[in-house]
Image 1 (cartoon, rainbow, N blue to C red):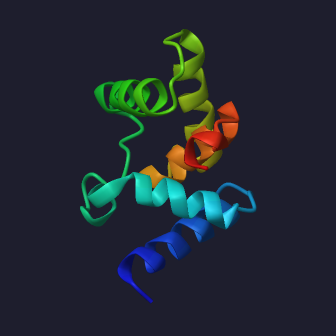
Image 2: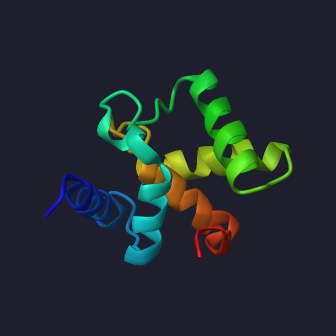
Length: 113
């Protein structure tokens, strides 16, 4: 298995064990690939859930630019909901998992089709 395949398996496990979700593996793979080389860097592969500037980056670069959503308070509410589902005390919140849950939350799977 490639390093990316190993990471996708780890993300799927997080979705199952920490988020109580059964992942759509095809979508999870596409979201992971969409993260680009960030998944291989220890710092950029995770999201600091307690850092407001990091959450703004997720909102602006992913939700608005990538998913094409309009800026509104609902975006930050969705990020907060996803972080709650993932577990705020969970130290390693993987970017691909958070992005996957946001795609599902907003029903934007078509962006990755």
